[in-house]
Structures are given as structure tokens and as C-alpha cells.
Image 1: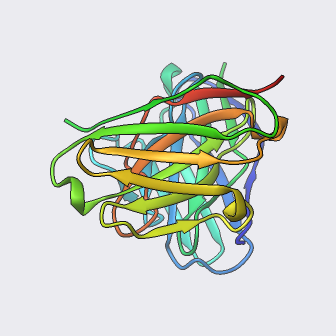
Image 2: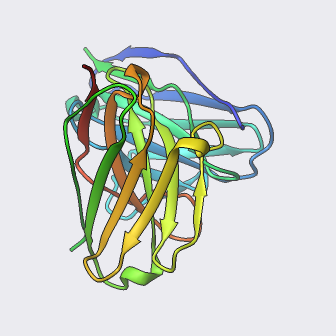
Length: 106
Length: 117
């Protein structure tokens, strides 16, 4: 299995801030990485695919970066409704997810 | 409009078989695959397995011995069977659509399954 490790596990920031969540793969996955947002009681929602491509309909305040084993999800100009848990997922082989990063908006 | 809807019992006894159905509705239905994933309460996501409309399958090696995914093309139903369940199988179970890669662009709302006597 390819292990995915996210940091930090929790993050607290203020409206208008810019934050970055990091995801590390246990082996190279090229750019086969996606990011999802999940709100309580809801299914995950695809934000970014192939490490840096924005899914249709997703605000450009979300951006992705990285390749190989190190990846990042940046959210700029934080809004109250960005409060959620964010997961990275590799799809180079059978899919595995990071443990999630819970983002709290102060 | 893309729709996926999970259904099935919310309570299963230990050692029994968990059975769920995902009813799907979207254009070009035979161009997509359907995966099952799960999420224990308060925990992360785990991929269980997938089936294509044509019948190809692949499973998470950690669950492979207990999982079967099938499709009823006449009803646009995908089914999940997980045998010999334990409390560790208690989770919200999701079905999710993807194309050739495991990129999940649409998900069902999820259904909570509790394993308890």
C-alpha cells in the first residue's frame, strides 16, 4: 500500500488568512493526487485532481501543488464555510487517503 | 444530473453479511466505474473495491477475502457484500463514481451501518 500522511492534523485560522495543508506519500506517485473537502454528515467533495488541477465549479481560492512525494493544498482568503476536514488521496495504485486535516475558522 | 444513492440495513449482527445497494443515474453510465468506500465514525476514508459496468472488479487487498461487488445493469444497481462482519466494519458506507482512474467525482450521501448484536 502507498501510505499518505497529512500535516497538520488540525489547523485554526482566521477569515481572510491563507493556509497550506501538506500531504506526503510513502513512495513517488507522480501527480496522481487529489484533494477532497468533507463537511460533517456529508460525503467528500472533489476539489483538486492531478495535484494541481481545479475541479470544475470549485473556487479558485483553492490551489494544489507538488509532485513525487510532497504535495500541498493552499486555501487563500479563508471564508467561514471553508471550515471542514480536508483529505488527500493518491490514485497511482489502489486508492489510499491521508488521515485528514480539520480546519477550524476562528 | 448525476445521482448515486446507497440503501440497505443500518444494523448487521456480528459474523453475518453486510449487503448494500447503490442505485445510480447519470449519462453514459457504461463509461464509468463504481467504487465502494467506508468511513468509521470520526475516522478517515478507506477504499473497499470497485466494479465497472462491464463487470471488471478490483478490491482492497486487506478486505479482498470478504468482499464482493456486483452490478445489475437492468436496474442500474451496484451491490456490495461484506461477509463475516465485526464491530470494526461499523462505518458510513459510500458509493462513488469514477472513470479510468480512481478519481471520485461524485459520491452518494452515504449510509451508516452498525455491526452489533
